[in-house]
Structures are given as C-alpha cells and as structure tokens.
Length: 265
Image 1 (cartoon, helix red, strand yellow):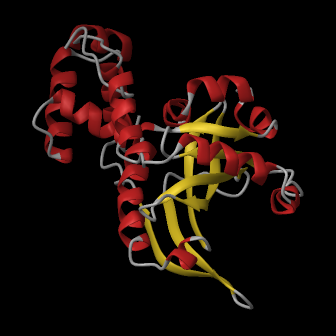
Image 2 (cartoon, helix red, strand yellow):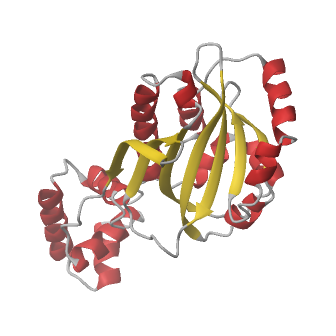
C-alpha cells in the first residue's frame, strides 16, 4: 500500500461545481443598487450591534460577496480582501470536507421547502446550520451560521443572502451537524418548519486497528507500519483484514476514505 493517496478535499473544479448548483439569475445593476442602499439603511445599522458575529452578504447570481465585515478576520484569520478575492470557494475550502457534503444535501432540502413558501414568508425565513472549519492558522472551530434572504430575483428565488457567523466552539465540539429552516412570526419569534441533523458512524475499530489505519492513510507500506508500531507483518495484515470486515469496505482505499469522512482518523 505504499504511496496510497487519499482524497481529503475537493479540487478547484469540484468546488466550482458546488458553487454553480446554488447559483441564481439576476440583473447586476439591480443587485448593486440594492446593496448600496441596504448598507446605508437603518436595518443594516441595527445588525451591527451583533459585534460577535461575522457578516457576509452574497450575490447568488454571481456567487461573489457584496459585503464582508472586518469581524471575519477575527473568526477565520482571513481578511475581508482575501475572502472577497477567493469568493465562496474560500468558505467551502475551510469547511470540513464531510460538513461541505452535508451542507449541499441540506441546501437541496431547504430549497425544496422554500419553494412552498410565499414570497413574504421567504423574506422572513432563516436557514441555520453549524459546521466545522479550519482557520488560516490551523485552528479548528465550530461555527453557527444563520442565513437570511435579503432579496429575491424575478423567479422568486433567493438572490441576495446575508450570513451571520458565530464561533460556538466553547459550547459545541462534537461532529454532529444540525440544520434548520425557520420563519419569523411576529409575537412568537422564529418558528421551525424544517429541522434535521447529520451524525457520523460510531467507530467500530480498536485503538490498535486505528493506529494501523492511520499509518496506512499516511501512505506507509505494510512493512513500514510493522516496523513503526513494532508489529509483525502478519499482525498488520490480520488487522487490515479485520478492519475491512468490520466496516464492510471493499478495499483499503475505501476504508480509509470512510474513516476520514467519519472523523475516525
């Protein structure tokens, strides 16, 4: 198994595909006019009281950010300029790979429910989810994201979206990803109309098997693993056979991918 390469992230073309499937149509002049007025409005000024939130406003027709608050630097380590130049691809790249996949699944479910709402209800809707991501300095955080629709396009699809992000690492550090879609009701607050979560499989492997699997993922050969862990060649092979059976994987590559996706290694 020497030289085994395991995919732990998407390549640029795959990130571009993720971006395209959530894209909508719009008139760029209309978008710019709206955002210019919104940033000067009392509505947006009131939002600034949430100083612990990092705010980003996204044009879903171009998938480019129209506004990025300075607080994003504190949250992610990336400056507004870096985030603006990198676009939505930056957000996907710093998000844990498994959470990115989960998010895309959640978005499709949320969009299906949104279609059933009136335009007025859409404007009061909030899509919330938590996800793991890695800061520029390598620090890992758990972040709660709230997404609000600021404007719809002519097809009544979300056009301009505002994301408000908060670090919740001190309160939540597990691998479960929760998401919900709520609609604000005057006098009652946000009423949840869709709620679900993604959980990872409980690891069925022993500590020693995980050590072997981790070294395998690093590209070490059977002999190198045996030498490093002070095991015989046959013991390493036995561990590998047992692991394949336990996780019901067809081969070692599939097993390693499964382990990474479920955060076992």
